[in-house]
Image (cartoon, rainbow, N blue to C red; front, top):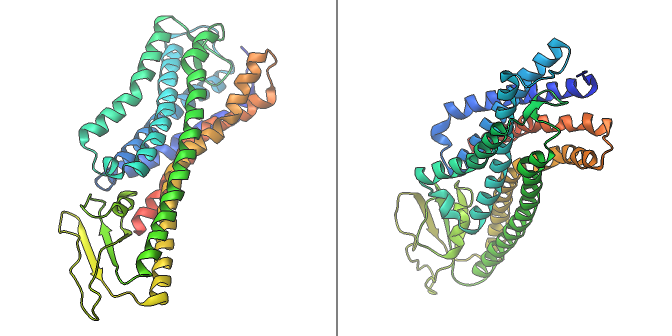
Length: 356
């Protein structure tokens, strides 16, 4: 089978960049693991691991094909192994993206579930991601459907489009649609909660009562409902807690926030009129923007995945019509950059947490 260098060279460049970038990030994750133990970090690490193995697999096969000057014509054991690993890891990436979308939705609705998730929960989440990829890869292998294809690797042979779309493309389409819907819901919830928090602070500082509590560590504390926003990202977050204070001048009550495993600093102060409310509004707006930035960064992993897969999806649809497009074949090399982009996102997130 002849080479298509216009498509295979960009594809190899993309897989190589992703392989190197994800390897670097995985090294950082391993060395910094004590500070990256929440469920969302486990999911990100799992995503990057699957992308690393996939890009390494594609890079090795791409180099071999370019060096040999032709695509193999028979499904050799190495070709079958390459196809099996490719199917396994690319689907693990798909389900990792879905898991991250679901976890983000849970974060903004039930923050403490994610913040206080046990090791067992994390293990179950990771295992669940890999269950279907393992099953689908084994099914294809048992049907002897792995073989040479037109790209830089071996995969499900063109004669088995039922397996291609039933076990891979169709599921990916469904995951992408589900991801878009989930993050639309997340955006709405976050926007609504941030607006409610700011409105609550204005009501409090416009009256004769108010407390401001700074919560560190993301632990669950038995205070007002607004505290759930403190656990949203599991970092230091300012939340407004409404409690009654004495109306006599100079008289203060102790904070209602009990001592716990978290580091809690509570200060009660008499309202200072418009200036106090304005100052608090600024602080809450700044904190809200930071929280939204963190959530949006978490959302960026699946979002980049969807964007980079658009040419690949378009190419699949065109192939179904029976009129393949060379332009789309070349453009779908963008799918090999998912690991590279996710690595950059992780480094940005890592620097953000180090600054806090």
